[in-house]
Amino acid sequence: MGLDFSAQIYNYMVVDTLSSAFAALSDPTRRMILDRLMRGPATVNELAKPHKMTQQAVSKHVAYLERARLVAKKRRGREHLCSLRPNAIRQVADWADGYRRFWEESLERLDLLLREDGEKASRRGRSK
Image (cartoon, rainbow, N blue to C red; front, side, top):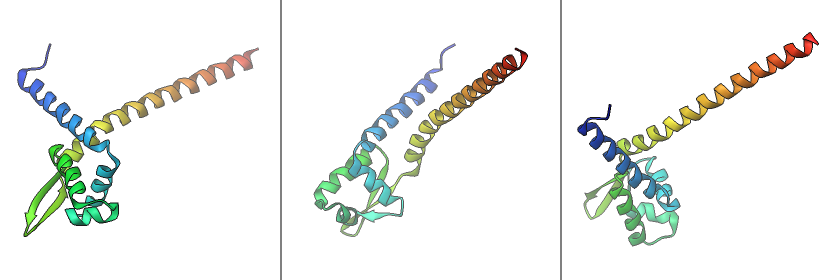
């Protein structure tokens, strides 16, 4: 039986959000910006300093991260203060965690099979 319409829409929105997030994460400068924002909010000027980039260039990266909903930006006087959006980051982490669990379970099953096979071979060797 298929998913109902609202579940299909929700799944599409999550996949679309993940696509935007992964596209944003594909750039090393944007990942460094996110790493910096994990320590707390920062202005665009503060984000630009360690990268030896113009404020305008960093603003473009921040805008890309905003469109992917990974970063929120608000005005503070004449400056823009950037901060992480934890829910968007959580969606990426949850998606990746599903694959981590899959591979851990697969490797555990493989380990079990190899141990069982080794025990059978050991018993065969003793019976000869």
